[in-house]
Length: 154
Ligand SMILES: CC(C)(COP(=O)(O)OP(=O)(O)OC[C@H]1O[C@@H](n2cnc3c(N)ncnc32)[C@H](O)[C@@H]1OP(=O)(O)O)[C@@H](O)C(=O)NCCC(=O)NCCS
Image 1 (cartoon, rainbow, N blue to C red):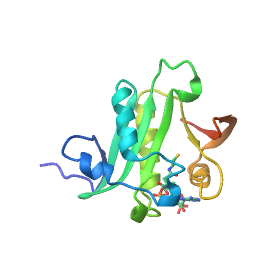
Image 2: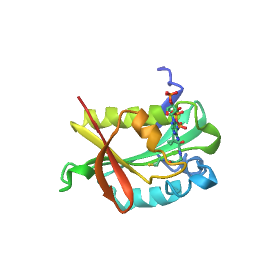
Image 3: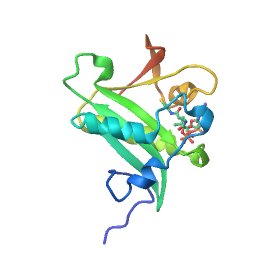
C-alpha cells in the first residue's frame, strides 16, 4: 500500500463536500475571498476550466484552492489564474497557503503554462504581502479594483 502524504490536495467529491464548505476564513477576511460554497457553484458552471481542490493535512480539511486553466482564453492574464485560496481561520500561518500556491504553480507547469496570475483586493488585511512574498510581481493592471499579480514559471 502506498503511504498517503500528510499534506495534499484532493479532488472534491460527495464524500468531502461537507468538510470543504466548512473551510471558513476569518470574518473580516470575507471581503477578500468568496465562500467555498460559492466557488464550488462556480466550479460547476465552469467545469471545463475550474480546478477546485481541498487541502488536507492528514484527516483534516485545512484549505481550499481553485485555479482556472484555460489555454483558449483570449486575455493572457486569465489563462492560468489562482482564482480562490481560502485557508481556514484556525489554520492560517502554518505554511498551508504556501503549499497551495506551490501546488498551483506545479500544476500550471505540468500543463505547459509559462505564467500564472492571481488578483487580490488591496488594503488593510489584504493577501498582497503574502503573494509578493511568494514571488508574484504586480503587473500594473487593476481590474474591478483588484490588483493583478504574475509569476513567471521558468
Ligand atoms: C492569505 C492566505 C491564503 C495565506 O495563507 P497562510 O496559510 O496563512 O500563509 P502561510 O502560512 O503559508 O504563509 C506563507 C508566508 O507568507 C507570509 N504571510 C502569510 N500571510 C501574510 C500576510 N497577510 N501578509 C504578509 N505575509 C503573509 C507568512 O509569514 C509566510 O512567510 P514565511 O514563509 O517567510 O514564513 C490566508 O491567510 C487566507 O486564506 N486569507 C484569507 C483569504 C484570502 O485573502 N485569500 C486570498 C484571496 S486572493
